[in-house]
Length: 175
Image (cartoon, rainbow, N blue to C red):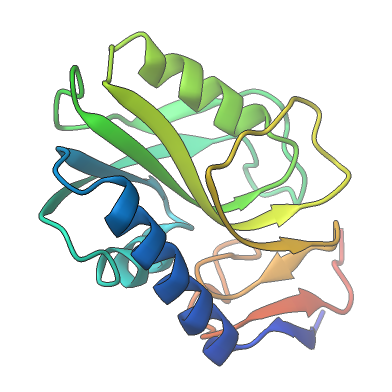
């Protein structure tokens, strides 16, 4: 396996996160905003996006698993780490690195909706096109990408490559 072509450059990611941050700032002005990052992949997106939002906000993290060591979702979602904060009455924005099948996000949305937030929306850096198994409603989308296996900027292959400052396609998935 080796890193293939760069799909989204560091500069393009920075530019788009700044645009998304400005949109979020306007949409949530005067509201109690809680950003919820889905670990591990979204930690970079959360860090950089949160610095682009010009509002007081709170952050929290959830860890879910639907992949294991595979490159495609198993469809079975497990919560590995739940939120520390109560979300009832708060405006919650789930921050995702990538949305592909939509199954994990749909499970997460249902899990959080029963906790009665004032609003619940999604910001995703990447949305893979044409492979959603359930409808995906992302209010903020960084980039739509083809259904290739990608790494970098928080996205991994068996735990590796998260530290790349760009998003690249794997030349040979090896799976």
